[in-house]
Each structure stands twice: as structure tokens, then as C-alpha cells.
Image 1 (cartoon, one colour):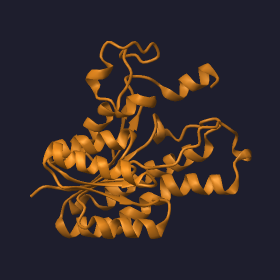
Image 2 (cartoon, one colour; image 1 turned 90 degrees about the horizontal axis):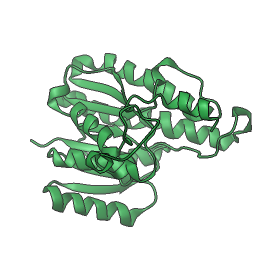
Image 3 (cartoon, rainbow, N blue to C red; image 1 turned 180 degrees about the horizontal axis):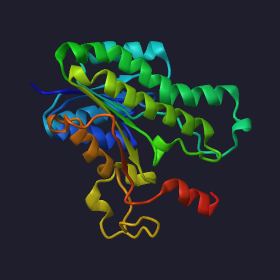
Length: 254
């Protein structure tokens, strides 16, 4: 029987590419989106037509408990939960300059949202004796590094790394794995590109010599969502092309 996956923030960026890879693997998919209904619905239709799987879209802001409850109710039995959505403020500023709402929005969207959906969907996974939780972090998140002018985002993702590891241990006997993927500096259009589109393109700051793509991340997510990954849990997996993202930011002063 085909597995069913929920991808939060799945209509754009890395979440979109991950949904494509899961659909290609035969999973039915639920695409969560926050605001662009037309784009999400069109993408779900494209997945259904292209891969012959059941695909649907559901609106919801994952930072809100009520929205997560609606998402879970709409989605039904979910075997694979991909925590991709998470707010990010482009402007760089020190912790003391964050507004109350900005801080709470970043923590809720990147950390508390994972608690909401995991709490709602884990019981069903436990009943069926199989489940996959996959979240996204950033390079070296497991070391709890300082990230100047990114305090709220870094704090949330660092807490999420600990939460994922804890879930992995608590649910190991239930046939459920929990892992985190840490993308490198994948920007702009590259988030929705596949690996072959980046071949031959220069990227001087990336040791492997080409830009990272959504496809680089999605293929790891698809493997972690598969039966073949059953012995991998509690892992923090960097997918950076060898690039230390935080040190790059520090050296360039950006």
C-alpha cells in the first residue's frame, strides 16, 4: 500500500522539490500552503497527472495550533511527515532589535509547529507501527552555534534538533524514525531546480564546485522516507557540498 506524506510549505522551494521526489517514489502527498491557494492546487494537480498518485493541497499556518489541527484532520492517515515550512526574516538584526511578535513568530513557526503536528500525527503512526519524521535545519545546528543577527531562527532550529533526536529515541520501538536534514546555502531559483541543472555552473564558495539544489535535499529526504532507511534515526545530516555556511557569512560580513 502506498505511503502518504504531508509536506508543510510544500508548494514552493525545497518543499516543492521534496514533494516531487516523494510522488515519484509512489507516495500520495498532501501539500500544505499558507497563502497561495491557486499555486498549491495547481501543483497538486500536476503531481497527480505526472506521477499517477493522489495529491491534494491544504491551507494552514503551521505556527497556529488550530490550523495544525485542521491540517491533520484534512490529511488523514499520514505515514511521512516532512517539516519544511518555517518563517525566516531576511533582514539581519541583533536579538535586542526583534519585536515581540517577530520572536514569537519565528519560534512558533520553526519549533512549536513541529510539536503540534507531531503530537497530532504520531499516534496514528504508532498504531500502524511505521512512520517517518523529517525536519530541516541548518549547517552545524547540532553544535548549537552562535549565528550573529539570526538569533531567533537559530534558537528555534537548534531546539528542533534536540526535539528530533528525542522523538527518535522515544519512538524507536514503534517503528518510527526521526531525522533532520541540514541544507547548505541554496538560494533563489536553485531551491526548485534538480541536480542536473546545476552541473557545470560555477560556485566558488562551494567545495564540490557547483550550486546546491532542491534536488540535492529532496533525494536525501526521499531516502529517509523509505523502507531502506529504517536503521537511521536521530541523525543530523548536512547536505552542503562541503560548504560551511555560517563561516562563510562570518568571513564576508553579510
